[in-house]
Length: 157
Image (cartoon, rainbow, N blue to C red; front, side, top):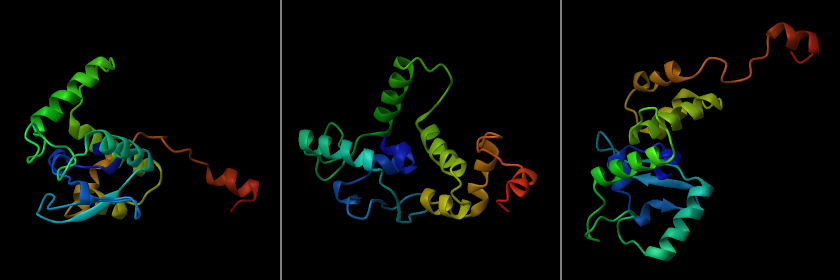
């Protein structure tokens, strides 16, 4: 849920600290993401509710998702294995990886009409060229397209 809702890379998610969640601003701070850059991304209100319940139950500190040893973050392999088990239990036969969640985040934002520059910043891409891949992943007709002639005749232009 965290990876999808914030568009995180796996390593960025495993290295989140409790202090990186800013409920007042509705953001998640990504420390030293790819290219050793810090950035902020979206914090879903649904995710925030889930994280609060999780925090009340488990009291993680300092890592949001600690590993077996509480002073180290969960390892990438553990997350990957859990993802594949969940995919199989859900009956999803299509191949997918944890990184598919990041792609889905970007694609869904694009389908909502979010501009590429904003998506670039949320994902932490160095160049817009990297973000342009999502134009190819977007399904044609995913947005309702109104023909300009129909708009003109309806008086909305």
